[in-house]
Image (tube, rainbow, N blue to C red; front, side, top):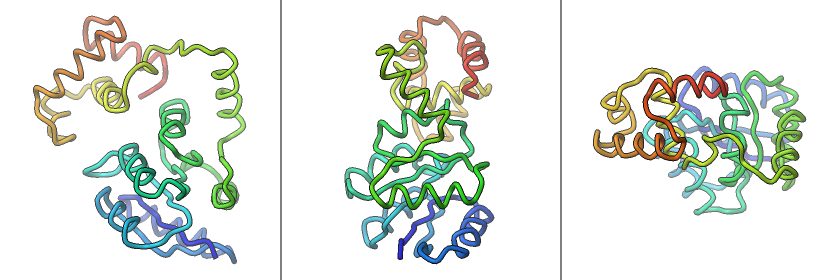
Length: 209
């Protein structure tokens, strides 16, 4: 029996996932977490075969949770299940150690297929993402400017692109205004931009918000 930890801050989502997986004969939900610290504590103290992880978690971002899980238990498969489209986070998640990336709009049978595949040690991505990854490897270059950003810088970029102020971002990420301003300066420098308007325009054109 494959034991699953569902890490998602929405009770309705967790309940829906439990109902989907209850219809299988080889998968059981043996743990739930509604925040980053709770997920990490359960991973540390309990044994799971696969972690289903949302990227939009309170207190600690999904990517940071993923990195800490892989540092603690490198062989534990983590399957990202999120509302964020593949083009926004999939490559970053896979580079950080995720075994697969599934959008929440995916059909239930496809989710079950993904869980079984990563449990067996495989990687799961959609055919569209597989094609993008193949092109990324063959092409050998990272043409999109945002790919040069760190995970935190990319997170701040997306928040700026949605119109949030430096103060609002600092409060949401529990970081100082000075720290967020530093991230913003790095983003502008790395992407050769001059203002928030440039960031917003780029984010819209690249479909990352």
